[in-house]
Length: 372
Image (cartoon, rainbow, N blue to C red; front, side, top):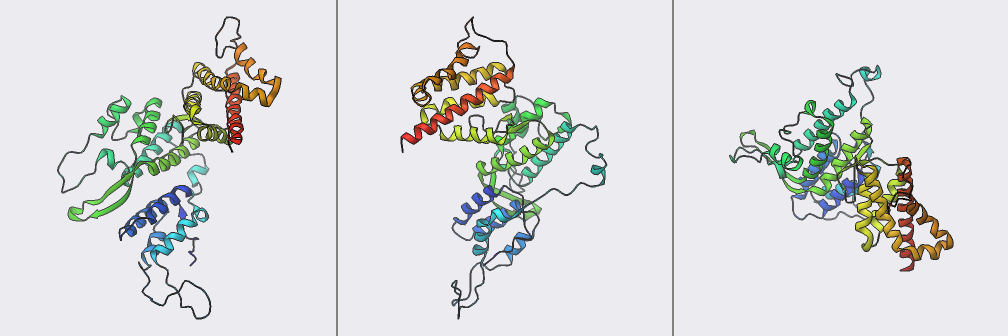
């Protein structure tokens, strides 16, 4: 069969939709159809895909149906499983949902916010994102869910956030009251609290509504980071939520794609004996509130790894190997001696960090090639 994708728009990152779809396809029993409908409701814009899915039979009723084309073959009626499988396999071809083109007030430079504050507008937009997550059951695992058949008190969501963040009365969300630290704190806390329900059922008694179950925080956090990072980029904050590393789910400074690729390689390709040091160095350096001291500490961690690999570096670079360590030894980076130079721009620390991290990644590859 060939699914017509022209009417669909994907709200999720394609890789996340594929991951959840493939997991769903392995589900045994008839409940997989309810899970599939819920996934389509969440991941694709509008109701078209859900309607198309609902019109298909659960299984083929034609005992003579054939999947082999050619003369004499009977036409095959696609089943829900066939259609959904193809949709998942072709997720990369589905058009991403786009925001509507600017309307008149935006084109005239008006309507951004009441006070003209981009930051304040970002806080309201963040509250709307969290509202959508709440409506879809992503906070139920921690905050609970109201039901007419259950009179037990729900957990105190505000107290739960306060235990983690140390600030009271933050739930329900009131973005107009947040300062910058509170806003960024909530961004990080709620990253750790979201969890995607892969199953929901409708409780009709007393118009109770949808109830959610089977929670998984991995896909929820991927989706959360995608949505919140898009918001932070649009607001020009210069920060994003880390997708891997020791600082997973914490706000870090935005870096360009090339350096992002280097960080990814260093985090994922380092041998076990240096993984902790590399992860800690990266977390120290890219923290939202990284100071010159924390950047020096990051460089120190990488320098220690390179010292341990000095013989390898000398073997590959010869006498030029000394230049790599001379800067760290002569400047106020590691040993902190009186004869070291300490008055230089912070940009120097950035340069040394990326140089050292690139050298760590290079030596990782040299070591890996020897073990092949």
